[in-house]
Amino acid sequence: MRVLVIGGGGREHTLCWKISQSPRVDEIFCIPGNGGIEKVAICRELPYEKDFSSLISFVRREKIDFTVVGPEAPLVGGIVDQFEKEGLKIFGPSRKAARLEGSKVYAKQFMKKYGIPTAEFETFSDLKKAIDYIDEQKEPLVVKADGLAGGKGSIVTRSKEEAIEAARQLMEDKIFGSAGERIVVEKRLKGEELSFFVITDGVSFKVLVSSRDYKPAYDGDKGPNTGGMGSYSPAPLRPSLFKKIINRVVIPTLEGMKKEGTPYKGVLYLGLMIHSGEPKVLEYNCRFGDPETQVILPRLFNDIMELFQAVDKQRLDAVDLKWRSHATTCVVLASKGYPGSYEKGKPIEGLDNLTRIRNVFAFCAGVKRENGRFLTNGGRVVGITGMGKNLKESIETAYRAVKKISFEGMHYRRDIGYKGLVS
Ligand code: AMP
Ligand code: GLY
Image 1 (cartoon, rainbow, N blue to C red):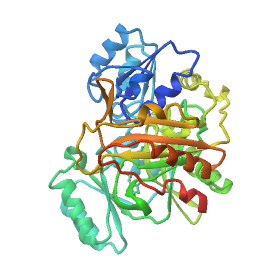
Image 2 (image 1 turned 90 degrees about the horizontal axis):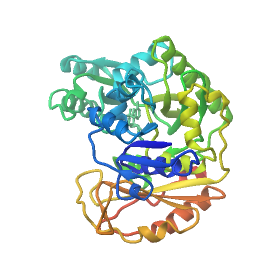
Image 3 (image 1 turned 180 degrees about the vertical axis):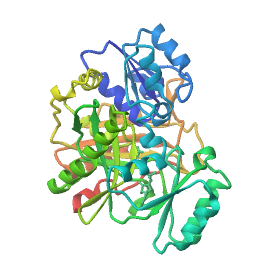
Image 4 (image 1 turned 135 degrees about the horizontal axis):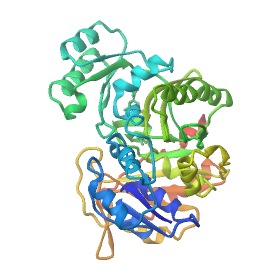
């Protein structure tokens, strides 16, 4: 079969790599892909975020049998509905189901309606009312743009002044355009963050192995938030907490979506805050995580196409997920200046040799290939995943491999995975 993957980051490289191992697959295409993905898939540049007409023509022309969507923008934009209308097979939630990520106001109101634990909140479409509300609050707040903002739409604040400033930036200065026309103001929660993924066909669901990502740019969780500077799997998760997440969050969410008439199909990513053993939902995402995918998929034994096709046929109940007991750690190597502005086009040394080392995977993100050389082409450049018998070994393997890579201005966190060793 011929498979198309949409997206061009480390998550999509991991998806293409895993799909390439499927005996069912003859050819993989990736739009837009990147210089690393080129090794396993045929990459093409085409619009894919909002306008799906050229994608649909491409899928017909290339006789693609199945499409897998990586990023949120096309899902929120309704790619699945349009493909299905054309009779094309695709993995991901419908536009209405993807509102769980596409609109924070929708997601919060949904959680309230179905009693799903989350931070107390109010929503606003009027700046003055938002400021009056913030002024009355005693505890620290988080101010969130309603719509998609490339992962930067949630502003965690320490004081009323900061929260008011955040509301102004979103609603008056419109730093994220129309995404900030409405905002959510919620209580800031304390605790440990956990990423929790389920795959569902709208009838049944399966849980993926646990993982944790690191959003702040620098060691010790300092510095600005990024798309994710690293991840590890498994993340310690007590059985009692696991049960609470399933019973209080996963089941009510999936049942709630059914009751709303928008059953959820695809991967649902729960961003959770755990405090005193109690989970609360920070956010829903309608897709795989990046860089969580880089530590989850190398642990999966199953043919991933079997999984995607089972979701399509609503036969996920018949699939038995099998996981390696090995642990994985992914360290993201970033460009100087990231998550702020950065330069591109720096030669990357050492990438070719790395793919030959056992238990090491180099999943490319901001990478392009020019005249046989790899050049940097984004903020997060490459994620190095190490696999080991246990977490400690996977951390050591990942960092040993990181030492073999270099490019001008490269920076990365040196403490990825360590949280998992002490907790
Ligand atoms: P979100 O876009 O909602 O996922 O938020 C991005 C990040 O902001 C999360 O991963 C948390 O680190 C932080 N965050 C969001 N909401 C809260 C909250 N209510 N309390 C504390 N931190 C939060
Ligand atoms: N790892 C964060 C995200 O995928 O949104």
